[in-house]
Image (cartoon, rainbow, N blue to C red):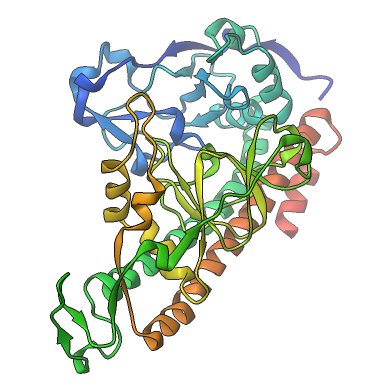
Length: 414
């Protein structure tokens, strides 16, 4: 609002770059927040962080703690520069952050970290940070740019009220994320029981036969992943892309998830893209993205660094869960080609051995699991709508177009 004080961000806190480490620091004991942990999240998710040996910690003050804000400092994608996360609670174990990130720790008690976490994730400030990233091959943000950023400093009580309103949207999204996780765990659990442990419904009454490749229930056979899904190579030049079509880059594909969320449109794509359609499977084929596998609940265009598979009719759920199975992902890593930038070899993956159940079991699995995948997709879509509503609120509150009291009233009604 017009009567709010404006100040430089650097006067409210201090900045520090993260750890630089190498393969020699491999190990466990020290969790690390890296660029891949940001995605579209608001808060650090401690359950998904990679770990290093504690010897990688150069100085004790490189640790993160509650109320810190982390920024993406360096990345090949300029649009990721300045993306931020709030450390919502004290880490459950020693945790630092990578050298591709910057930490902001507030020292001024007039600043509420939650309010500034939302402020600094807003569209206007994100665009400002992206536009100031320097460098050629790798774009960079630095502490000076962040420190000189002019930000509003509302009264502390107003900051807390605004943060509380916006946090309500994040809480709803977190509930949805947990529901998605439950659905995904159920789907993977059924896949493991039916097709790996061979404990499918009625398995007790089905004879097991020996085959050259191993025992199988009667009526089942050994097949290839290509029997479950075939690769689709449908590329399009940027000038031929519908600018309103959803765009999915490798950074948007979650880790072994059953479904994708919409992240943006293809209006600004500037290179060859791959078209996919609803029901396809996207698989990150460049290391370290082999663990990124997702089902597409909409038509769109994506990075050509993702393999696109189109499931065989009647085998969609089995194909998706086979592609996200730990053994399949490990196989893609072992058989990847190249040294500087290893890539998954789709011809090798097409020959990956997998079971082909009897038709009645396949049909039953699809009937049971497909609704789980569809439900997860609906929850992802709901979260996208909640995030859009949340992100529209902040500039209206900051500009005075919407009073805090009115926003609280609207939230209560909703």
